[in-house]
Length: 142
Image (tube, rainbow, N blue to C red; front, top):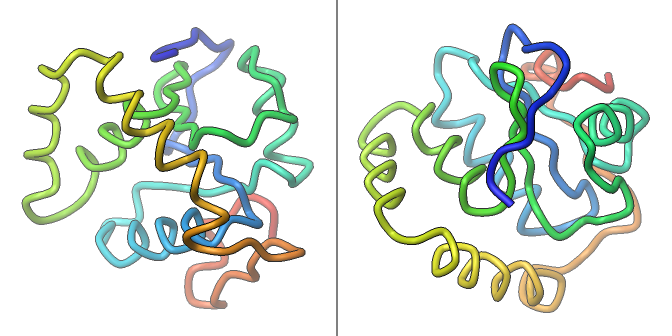
C-alpha cells in the first residue's frame, strides 16, 4: 500500500493503531519511551477520531491489519508506516530507514505474517488501553 494522499497535513505525525491488539499497544508504549521530543500523536483505529482519520485518508476503517501513520498530508501503511515511525524516534532507530532499500513486497510480506498472527502471539483485549496521565495529551481521543 505505501502512501495515500490526504486533504490536509497534521502538525504532528499521527499513529493509528489497533487499540485491542496486545502487540499494537506494546508498540505504542515502545514509541512513547523513544520519542523524547513528543513528536508522535496516537489514536486507536476503533475510536471516533481513528475512524474519521481512516475515512478522510481513503482507508477502510474496518480493516485492522495495519498500523497507519499520517504525516505531512500522506498516510503510510504496513512496513512504510513502521519505517516512518522508526525514522522519527531517538537513538539509532532512524538507521532503520535503510530498509526502504528492501522491496516493499518483501517488507510487507513479513509485516503481513506478523499482523496475521499478532492476536495469537500477543493477545487481544476487549477494550482499548487507557493512556498514562503523563502522556494522555498525546492521544487524540482523550
